[in-house]
Length: 328
Image 1 (cartoon, rainbow, N blue to C red):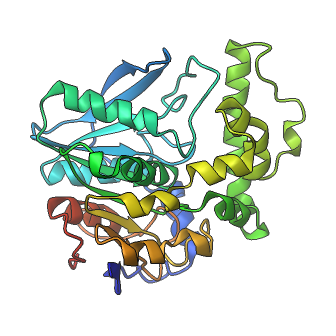
Image 2: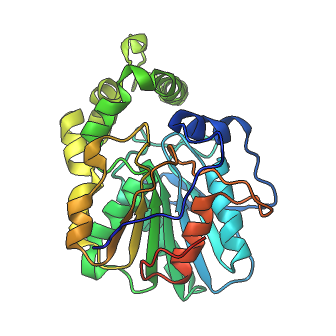
Image 3: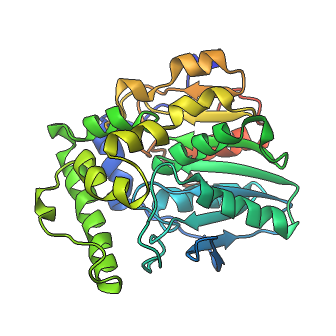
């Protein structure tokens, strides 16, 4: 305890396959009804973060952190934003550096452990003085970032932050990278390396001579990309040093507020080490829920509200952040 023994999630007929779960919403889901208002804030190193607000006049706000090569317009972000708005939460879906449709201004970009940017977003909210409660929501890379942020701050976490929910999180980055390098994940890996290449080419255009894509076609895995780009651009010795220092698993024991992690047992992106069972058993504030099915950032549901199961789970937990696995 608090490993949640059972989950209420049951996949619809025909959606028990993890790859179908993962790919279906990416290819077909459209989320309507979310209207953003964008705000740009500046970081201490003179870069910018674009924040997309969806407000309903609430006194509480949820900060939503997207996954690798995502943004505030991804279906999974829009889905949870809509569900939270319906439940009386304002939301702030922030775009990590270079993810808002415009290249960022520094040679560095974003990565799984860049918690100083999440801190800048949270501090901006607190300085605004509008909200009495803040919830955090993170998907995949954004989930790792969220859990690392909470653990780093431990008992010093701002009292306004009342709970967090994360989904499909590669809690151990090194083994997660190995999992993604497997042949069964080739289709996803090709997509990610292609998208990351576009980011490199954008940087080459605005910072000629400072970064190169010579031989990029040889990069087939996250470890190769992180060795060449992520590590040196962000102050790590190599990919292994990056994985070691940025993985959230080591920070989970220090989390002091109610926090839920939902990782499907069939998630094709996650290794065995990405399910922090021991950490959940040892920390009464950290709840681990492992549905048998769900894929990666999916948990498909078909209902009149057009909400996926995880979106309702976020609302349920943040409305009552005590870790109970309410039926949804």
